[in-house]
Image (tube, rainbow, N blue to C red; front, side, top):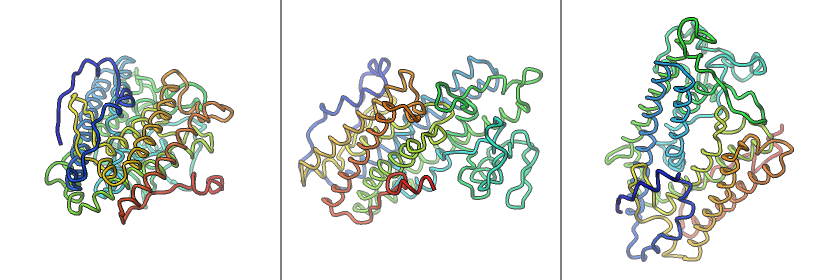
Amino acid sequence: MTVRTTPRLARAAASALALSTALSAFAAPARADEVSKEAILKTYAEIALAGYRDALKGAKALDAASDALIADPSEETLAAARKAWREARPSYMQTEVFRFGNPVVDAWEGRVNAWPLDEGLIDYVDESYGTGSDSNPLYNANVIAADSVTIGGETIDTTTITPALLQDKLQEAGDVEANVATGYHAVEFMLWGQDLNGTDAGAGDRPASDFASGDACTHAPCDKRAAFLDASTDLLVTDLEEMVADWEEGGAAREVLMADTDKGISAILTGMGSLSYGELAGERMKLGLLLHDPEEEHDCFSDLTHVSHYYDVIGIRNVWLGRYEASDGSVIEGPSVSDLVAAKDPALDEEMTGDIETTVATMRKVYDAAEAGEAYDQQIAEGNAQGNQRVQAAIDTLIAQTRTIERVIAELDLGGVTIEGSDSLDSAGAVFQ
C-alpha cells in the first residue's frame, strides 16, 4: 500500500464528483500471487482511518463555525455554519460502508448519523407537526423550552443543556430510535429548523435570531438553543475522535477486522451489500419514493440528501477498488477485493466494477438535478414523473450491483455474509399497512 500526494489545484476547482471519471486510469489488478487477504484488509483499514480523520477534520470546522454563530448570530455566521455542515458530509458519508459488518462501527454509528428524528423532542415545531405520537411520549417534549422531562418515570432536569444530557439521557430516550439528540442530523435541525415546504422548493429557514440574546432573541430561550448546538457539535467531534482511535494501529475496530482474514473479507462485502441494498436503495430511497414523502429523505432539514446519497456510493467504490483520495490531497491505495476477484474471475471483477460505475453515474444524475435546483424531495414528489424515474434508476442500479456482490461472495466462497434487506424492496405492501 502506498500513500502519495497529488496536486491540489484541481481539488480547489472541482469537487470529488470528478472521481466518477477517474477509474479508467487505474492500474490493472495485481497477479494472484501478489495479493493477500491480509494486505487487502490493511488497505481497507487505512482507508477507514483516513476517511474518519477527514470526517473529524470536517466536524472540527463545523464546531468552530457553530461557535462563531453562537458568539455573533447573524445571517452571515448562520450561512457559514450551514456551509460547514454541508462540507463535513462527503467525508463522513464515504465511511458509511464500514458500518455494516464491523460491529465496533455499527454499535457507534447511531450516535453520529441516526435518522429520522422527531424534532419536537428538541425544539419548537410548527402546528402541523401535531400534538403527540402513540409511539413516542417525548414527541413534543421541547427540551430547549422545558425545565424538565419525564423519561420512563424518571424526571430529568433540562434547565442546563450539556453534552452528557444529550448523550446519556436524551439520545434514544425511552428506547425510541426517533429520539435523536446527537449527531449530524441534530446539528442539521439546529441550523436549518423544520422544512415546511413539503415537496415544493425550499429547505428549512431557521433565523439566526434564534441564537441571539436579549430582545433580539426569537423563540426563547435562545441561550439554551445555543447551548444545544454547542453541545451537539462538541459531541460530534469527540465521537469521531473515538472512531479515529478505533481504526488506528491497536484500535478496537482494526483489531477485530485483522483477527480473521476470511471474516475480514466478509465484513467488506457485508458493508458493500448492506449499504447498497437494504440501507440506501431501500430505507433511504425506495421508502420515500413509494410514499412520495419528504419526511423520509435522509437530510430533510437542509435539502442536501443528494450529497449524502452520492458519497455513499463513492464510499462503496473506494473499498471495492482499494483507493481513497483524502482531503489533504494524498491518495491511499493498495490491494483490494477487486484484485482478489480479478485473480479468480476477471470477467466478474470487470462486471462488478462496471456495475459500481453505473451506480455512480445514475446517482450523479440525481445529484446534478438537485444542484441545478430540483431538490431531492422534489424529485420524489408525487406527479414528478421525470424526478421519480431518475431516483428509481439509481435504486435499480444499487439493486443490480448488490446482485453482483452476491455473486462475488459466492465466487470467493465466503460464509457469514448477511446482506440487510428492506420492506420497501422486499415487501412493498407492508409499507402501506
